[in-house]
Image 1 (spheres, rainbow, N blue to C red):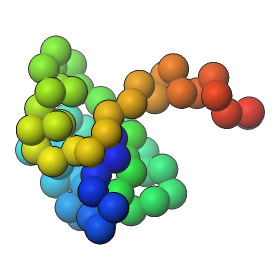
Image 2: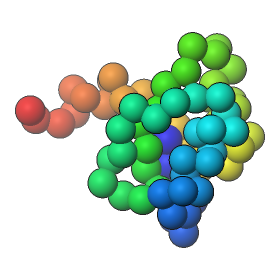
Image 3: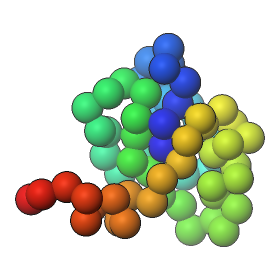
Length: 66
């Protein structure tokens, strides 16, 4: 999940919390968080809560070398 560019880590975590998700990891930037939820409406909820972009971390894993 990518929060607005000016969001700090606490604000980004707040988006995840308001969406009912849990943080799996941070991604090195204060506005990027890897999160998960069993809620089928999680992605829409992230956007409603202020996320700018939501990506599938599992699919992105293939784009980066180990």
